[in-house]
Every structure is written in C-alpha cells, then in structure tokens.
Image 1: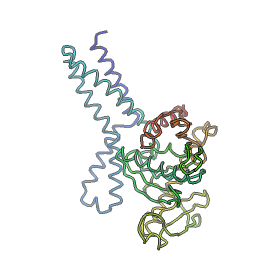
Image 2 (image 1 turned 180 degrees about the horizontal axis):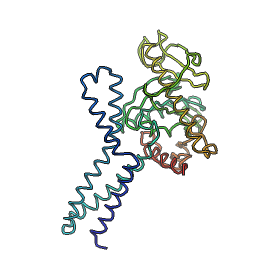
Image 3 (image 1 turned 180 degrees about the vertical axis):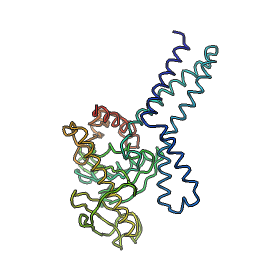
Length: 368
C-alpha cells in the first residue's frame, strides 16, 4: 500500500471517530449554547448579580472545555491535508505527518474518555469530604495525605480549591475536611473517588515499627445552583452550632460560628467553619447538604437503571475502592478497575488522572 494511502486511511479513521464523538456529545448544540451565553454576558447589567454571573461564567467555561479540543483537532486535520500534498516528496515532511497522526490519535483517545462524562451533574464543581476512619493517628495522617493528593491534582489541572471545613487532629493529620474543587467536569472526574481508601505502611507513630493498616473515607457530591430544586423541610434538619477550630486566628476559637447540619431522614451530616460569619457558614453548609442529597438521588437513579449494581460493592462510604501500599512493596491498586501504579509517592503527589480515566471506562463496561 502506498504510504500516502496509509496516511489517508488513518486520517479518515480519525475524522470518522471524531464525527461520531461530536454527534454523541451534541457538539452543534453546545456550540450554539456557547454563543447564547456569550451574548448574555454582553448585557450592561450582567455583573449586577455577582453570584449569578459567576455561575454563568462557569457554565461557559464548562462548554468551552468540551468545544476547544474538538476545534483544535479540526484545525490540525485541515493542516494535515496540506502536509499530505507535500509529504510524499519531502522526507522531513513525511516524518512530521507521522508525528501529527500519532498526536491526533492520542488526543482522540483522551476525548473519547472525556466523552464518558455525560452524567446530569458531571460538568459541575465538586464538593469533596474526607474523614479519618479506623487506624488511630495513622488514619488521621492518612486523611491529610489524601487531602493533599486531591489538592495537588486540582492544581495540576488548573482547578481552584476552596476549603469549607477542616478539623485538625490533636496529634497529627486531620479528623475531617471538606473542599470545593472548581473547574470544568470536576465532579465528573472525581465522583468515582467516593468510598474507602486503605493505606498499608510501617507506622511512623508506632515505636515498635509495626505495619499499620489505616482507612479514610472520601465522599464526593456535585455543587448545585439555585436552578436545581431540592426540597428541604425545616423539621427534617437539626442544626448544631459550635466553636471553630484550627487556623483562623483567635476569633475562630472564641465565637460559636461553625455550623453542623443533620438531615434526619437520611442521616446525612455536613458542617462548615471556613467563614467567620455564622450566617455564611450556615449558607455554605446548606449548599453542601443539598449537594449530598442530590448525589444520593443520583445513586438511586443509577441503581434503578442497572439491577446488576446491587451485586457490586457500593461506591460510597463503607466500600474499599483503592489500596495504597508502602509495605512490603510500593504500589497503588484500584479494587474496582484493576488499574495499578507502582510508584506510591507519584500517586500521592496528585498524579491520579489515570485512575480517574480507568474508572470512567470501567463504568461503561459495567453498563453494557
């Protein structure tokens, strides 16, 4: 087969898969949505309501994050046609064509994985909560290590992180922490992290140097805006006010500004102490509670669509979704997908994207 035919066949395959992907993601509709949002942002009174305008900007960023890689691939494919005309007679140009085709195929695989983020809340920001569980001080230390891991992942992907609540342990680490990760598809990527994370290592807090197994529970919910109606009755919510702890100066320890809300029907508990204002903490805690209840309803919907889920370990508190080993050897393995990495410290430095992608692909297989 002449080399130009091989190039052409590979390019045609890329175009075909790209076109199918555009159709599955309603590319044209999203392009139109972006135009509507951009037009709305030109209104003279657009910034009069900062909270509403920021939400609109966030929606535009989410849509653009989908459109941009498609547009970039379209541009590269158009340039490729020009290279084809020159490549047969120019060895240097031929090498560039091969490299461009390889890059396009790799980018297409990334897009196909991203296309799996098609849940109703996948484009939303994520509220991530970590709680130390069994393992004593090692579990508190482990919970803080996970908080650092997710914060570094967010930073590496240009996501913003806001701390909502942090309860430090007296000896080391944290008892719990809640953060918001803001950025396109944050919830879609992180939702698979809900569950129990298990660490096995030689304990730095054990004078005998024995191996210790520690657990920390991660819960991820989508941040929701006012357009999503969540019915909450006052009689179903118990509110506790307590003194904030941790960083924040003398003020946080002298005033009862921290808020804990308990949704009695479901037993869902959230708390916030990030703000000095009790009113602001209450508003944030209420938003966190609504987000958690939305996620619970989404789990029910998914279970109703796939009866086979009842035979699987629940992706949530109480399940062991991933094992992190520092002893006797270094490795991190996801118990659902089977994906593993051999460098513990690299994973804890925030390099978890491969685990997130593997979960997305695994969910598709379980739905088949």
